[in-house]
Length: 371
Image (cartoon, rainbow, N blue to C red):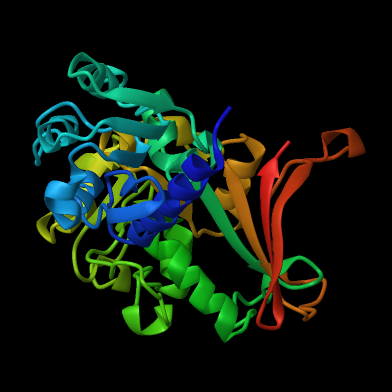
């Protein structure tokens, strides 16, 4: 039976890991506590990709006192050389007596090897303490390692009568300032943001994380990069002066036919990564696009798109979560819907499970998962 000390100290490690929510991409968020009994000797979290991992920070703070102590780690310590040396070896060299791990690393280059290295060195290993809570730190990393695709969140902002814009396309602003700040934080935990060319042409969004709009992020590590902006654009119609292209780090998915056209080449000359994917009658082949993003190391994908692209994600069940911000307003029967869905019978209705429901300013935020 898991003892209360292990639960308490692992909970602290999970709390630490969450501090890296805006900054570790594409690496997982990891926290570590070094303790002897109830006394914490050192603690740390992975702050940024390419920098020291959580175990190294915690061992550095514990110093020589780590010898004979217990390390509590939210994810199996790595056993391979990447951009940093293996953490399993660092724990062995520090002389810890025991390692408590919340969950195995699903990365095939690591899975089980880190724990085996520790056990081979005579270190006692306990697995599975607060495993589900630890997995929730990194749903995108876990999913990508298991099936090669990112974790997909579709964001919508709608009125009480289910409209996202007026018939003219006017949509600023349906929700209030608090909801817009919440969306900025949602963008900041995402590796990439996907939209369609229709949204680019109609709204000219930048789809960036604006630090000034994040508000107080407490003890979280500051964001250090912008998410990859991804445009689904069959014919490469995105204007070369579109705001979304500012600052680089943009990928555009077009058809293979459009790939060789002058507009696509002009976008490439601006530094846009233009790639051809298959298109179907109802739009982009989302499965192929998601596979391509997974190959790029995208863990968490946020979709901010119009009703056609958003509706395709919903209809094809290719989203993991729907984030719906509902404002206490009516936009009228001629307004644009949240999603275009080819549903005709009650039996075709798409049902959801409410994962979270809360008030954000004057608006309501629902996080829904498909049933």
